[in-house]
Image (cartoon, rainbow, N blue to C red):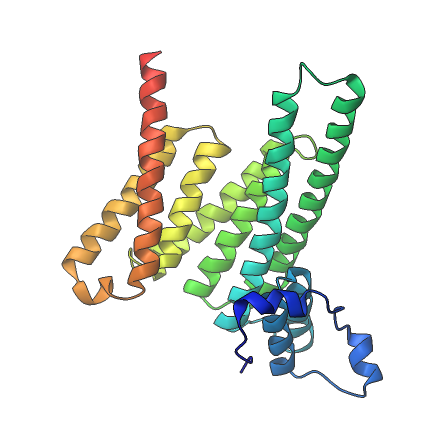
Amino acid sequence: MVPHLKAESNSNVFACLSPISIGDIQQMDMSLSRLDCLFLAKIADQAERYHDVIAQLKDIINDHNAQLTIDERNLLSIAYKNLTATLRASWRTIDALQKKEALSSTRRQVKLMRVQKDRIERDLDKLCRDVVDLLEKQLIPAASDGEEKVFYSKMRGDYYRYLAELTRLNSQEELGKASLEAYKFAYRHALATLPPTHPTRLGLALNFAVYFHDIMRSPERACHLAKHAFDEAVAAAVADASTAMSNIEDALMILQLMKDDLILWRGEISKESAA
């Protein structure tokens, strides 16, 4: 069990430590068990050292078993998600600055902003391709049918979607198709194996709808998919209260996000119709 430490002191204590490499372990005449790797991954997660989390879980995948436990899988997903979210937020910040300062900036300043944006795009491209490669070659082939396969296939769709957003570095059409195929496979599998109220199925429906809105530029299709998933979940919850109580907090959070997006997208459709 990971020692319980105060959250405020956690990052201060661990952030200053150098990562423990396999070479360091070998020099100490130690071999890492699966539980050791998981322990180190949890410590790295508490210290917000997400590259270290990924490294430890890759050791588990390569040296022990490509089929991760739920605990291991969630750590891996969160680590990639946090790293990706930081890069995407940085990219949006630079993009907004470029637009805001376009008229007042010198040519050199515009060029420097472009250089920084390119650097972020390359980092994001590398990270997304890393997780897609891990999913396609190891995690999805080793996954059991049902929730595990849906979870990983949804991840594959998500990271192809992020790659498709980097239109200057990649072919958006090709990567958009790869994202669509991943989402379609995951959604078909979810419909066959998971109840409508399952958080993984709901999260997949939400992200698939975001794909239609952001990549396909079709708020109508996004609304159709999100509303269908929302209505199915509500109907299933009303029909079977015991099913509704399973993972209720996660399901309600996703349903609220879905509802918020539906309101936003319907507003966009109304504006287009009025124009």
